[in-house]
Image (tube, rainbow, N blue to C red; front, side, top):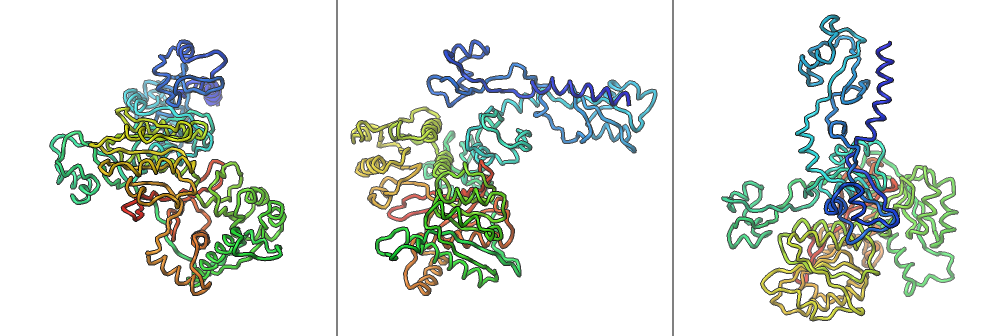
Length: 625
């Protein structure tokens, strides 16, 4: 008993001493009058290293900025986050780099040495009484932690600190650095228990792996051949040449080539309906049936709502034919937040398995608040605006956010880059979000030679001569457009589209406005235009043709894009719910015009991240991811 009391006493004081040491990096808030130079001097760190730790800083710092700085209290030996403690028991106590272990019945010296990876000399060195008394149940023995300083230093050299920003999730950070969520949590065990905290400093890899990209980049080494590369990466020589036309001129040392990433393998959701499954569905749609007349010729909202509803009915028909029993009731929200709130306060809403709608975010917010903590999944079907400020764990945002799609586009660009000249065409600063400003920096960092040029409009437009100066005849030029202002994007496309045909231009837009259909397809084809989108409907596919035929027979008209969305959303979510309600771990699916891959959002709600990257291949559109 005396020994245990002593251990407990030491334990509490040891933990207090340890807590200040176990983080290698901490945050520092900039105060009035401070500069990079003054902070560097104060913290005994060079301005270069301070900037290296904080790559988001461009020229200067501002009052209130949070910087990542080295922790003066940090002690490698005391950093338990860097040590494998998987063999430490639940009742073991760690103090000052030692494990205090109470001997259990049937334990032997051999089993302890084996479990804690010890030498018998070390066990006797720190527990001299064992020679006289032997090992007995109830004894508290002292075991040194298995520190390998060289291994720890090597591990730490491959990591860098990262400041968690608002709206970031474990998924988004892990994907940005090419690791799994499990790997992120193993680097930062604390976030497994407490989740991500805004402005916290976590550790991430120094080098970004491309395991979450469909491609990886390989640098040709000495003696490598086309045959050897084909064998090494398990793909045909024809595939290698198709992805890397430059290999036709020979396999040259130092050449960067694109390789399909075998690790790019999302779990795929398998459609299956358990026998006897029955689901209750409510649809909240803005029919506005109280209007005096239903003017389908001039009322766009009425057409969208009706088409979406007809698409949903088609999905339910298909599911019923496969054995799923669906009981549906439709509510008219009148596109009113007040009406939506009143409807969702009805007791019957707590009995539904699923609510699809309302269509618009203002109405979704009031329904989500009323339904918080209740049974139904609440589907926000059409809004791409960020839903992370809405706190309801059953809220599902079906359309990926514009910011998410831009980030995915940026990752795709990084994954296929092999040294092309990069020209960034960015809208004026005041028209860009903070995220867009960050994308400009990230694109510049892709170009390891630092030749990337940024062009911005002057007095509302960019002169054609400015474009021509950046285009080089003998080198492929990648133009990346940052900004979705319709006038700005149209101006860029028109300028690039009239460039001489001998120029080799590939264009990437991180986001697009609503005027995509108004752009000249010949220009888009000529500049090999790439863009991200949440929807892509291939009317030639067998599934699409079957849907169109079924829809025409029932409703005597061709389906609009909203009818396709109504089908996709209703079919996918009911199919998933017929199996279980865990959307996040079910895997990816693809329907007529949409992909579905659900993750947990910042507010614990659910976000669909499924999207497409499309490129113009001649006058046809081709999915590249």
